[in-house]
Length: 117
Image 1 (spheres, rainbow, N blue to C red):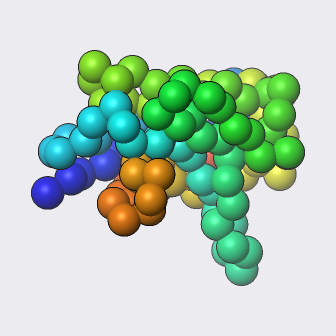
Image 2: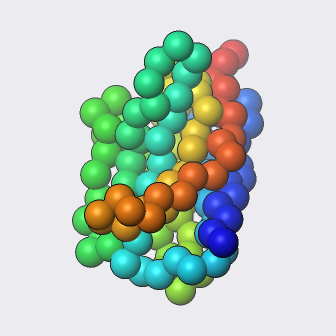
């Protein structure tokens, strides 16, 4: 059984920074893609950033240049450094571990990020 647990959400002022962390326990290997998605009420979940097994990173357009995703294969962890935060970054952020085929796909419970003055 795989468990995925996020941490690091909270309230931050516009222009501030937050770092989200996520750890997976169970049968996870470096072959998994690791990433972050976010969702606001009434909207579909959207890609924030992902780092695939090769180390290549992909970012959603709204966060390019402000967010950085990184992974530690030895610890089965993925982190999201968020800088220059904007009110529109407010959302529940979900961590995801998946195989490239999508047959194995695990989500965390989500962590709230609120950007407000």
